[in-house]
Image (cartoon, rainbow, N blue to C red; front, side, top):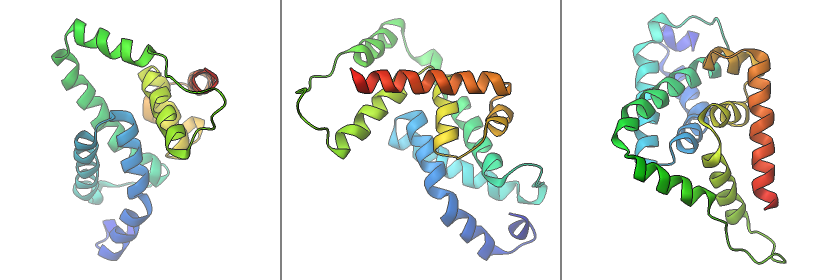
Length: 173
């Protein structure tokens, strides 16, 4: 990023190739909507470009990049929240709690496992989901997740522990 900040466009191409998957998966899993994820993805890179002259390597680059995406996602949640009525919210919760019909002796395909993980992630409280995604998708440590979310190390640890327990429970049911 430092090379890109100094004008090296090849450095940007390398950053983009290396981190585009992480940013997109993070946005997609947090937002559950391809159009919204595409917008956050594009805006994240636009903001990176706009902020290149102000970039300071105080933290790991991935942490800084995911902080941009995280802030955009939080802003999107804030804008969308008032639009949902109580009835719509209840319908979403009923869908998340609805039992899935599966044959117990059948082995889940890779697609089904991914879908089950997606449903488990959707079922997590927002703080747990974001901590889990930052850890798994972003490869960030507890301190870095704490910096991004404004939570202490032990709080992040608890969120990750509870998220993992809920995901495991979802796979066992």
